[in-house]
Amino acid sequence: MSADGFSGGPPPGAAADWTIDQGWSAYTAEEHATWDILYERQTALLPGYACDEFLHGLDALDLHRGGIPDFNVINPELERLTGWNVVAVPGLVPDDIFFDHLANRRFPAGQFIRRRDQLDYLQEPDIFHDVFGHVPMLTDPVFADYMEAYGKGGQRALGLGRLHNLARLYWYTVEFGLLETPKGLRIYGAGIVSSRTESIFAIDDPSPNRIGFDLLRTMRTPYRIDDFQQVYFVIPSIQTLLDATLQDFAPIYAALDEGQDVPIDAILPTDRVFTRGTQAYAASGGRLAGA
Ligand code: PHE
Ligand code: FE
Image (cartoon, rainbow, N blue to C red; front, side, top):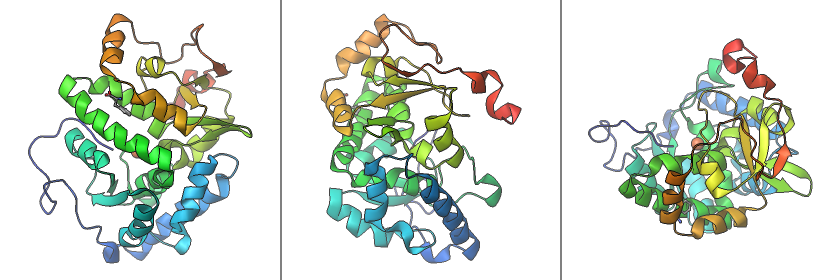
């Protein structure tokens, strides 16, 4: 993950590219146990919720061995499968640093793990979100290509002053994307699979809209960072997503200037609708209402 608003260089102890040593041997028993609780909960839930690509990736990386994964252990296998590596960072990194890592097939993962009172929700990505949520999909060759392309597209968007447009694509695919499968809708987005409550919400709840992915439509739609999504976009395959993003985005960015944002809960006549959501969750006040 990345965030705007950084000034100056990396924090003390971090390299120029913001990476740090994971310091695996310094994790406490309590921290390893927090991983195990989260891991057990999600792996028990996710069959029937997460897509096969994700579940296969989870198996391939053998994250089962207990406790927080050691990047030195998972990287050789990840490297062998798709040429990706996980690198440790203290937390959110500046956008240019983030894109440079992705463009070179390095996924920056937060080194820290959440506290016990944050099992269900925290706003900053920790190692559970970054590794459990993101890394399994990086074992899929097509998704691996998409993430590298996104890094390069991010560098380009930064130069064009278009990051606000591109960020929505990341949000509605990499973080909160759904996949259409013969067995029904399945999750591939890391922000969903790393959250027990949002996994259930994204697939089962009648509140959110679920709409067929369309590049321009997605980039016209604002998102919420503080609660369950009001709309999820569904791709027919990972390949479709990669194909849609291979085109030159400069004309897409220009086209975005011609139209307006779509309200977050709107359904357009041109939308392919999987679920016309009730929006009951958002209407009730969502997380703030303790719903
Ligand atoms: N094709 C995009 C461009 O021309 C780059 C990109 C690829 C962006 C994949 C996102 C995902 O800028
Ligand atoms: Fe993330």
